Length: 175
Image (cartoon, rainbow, N blue to C red; front, side, top):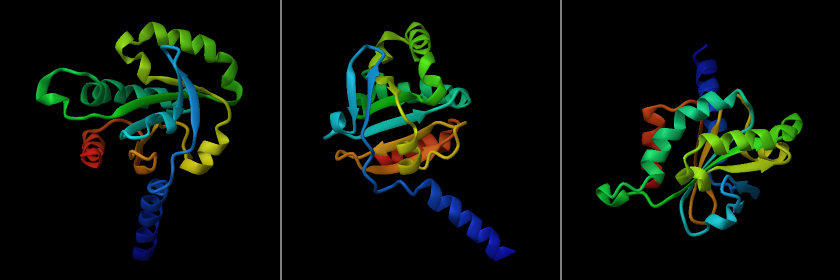
């Protein structure tokens, strides 16, 4: 029984971090401010945080991250020299049957998003399959977060609702 518990824990630890060390796959989209973005190419030379969410179920968990992530990594307050110089992108993925609803969802996102944050939200339209395979996006009810190094390689990955421990891990990986 003890061996089984250890094996299960190892499986989950390896599975969640299986992406670490891999190159982030190309992802093209348009920001809410209508700028074309190609990840990770457009972020070369800068550490980048990318959040992917591909279902309505992931929306609640994603919302739990927006304010803390914006306050910590995006907002320029002038305090402490704004210690983090990273790019941050939230990527709602319109795939499969959700593609036809993209225009309505994009309109609602624009109406509900502070103009200062519109460059940080990229709408992706296309297939989820390459990303599910390459990035192990196995649970659609959660958003997935990836830290990319200056060359676009994944240095850290996590998923789920916001919590202080995950935010601390992200901050530590960026430092």
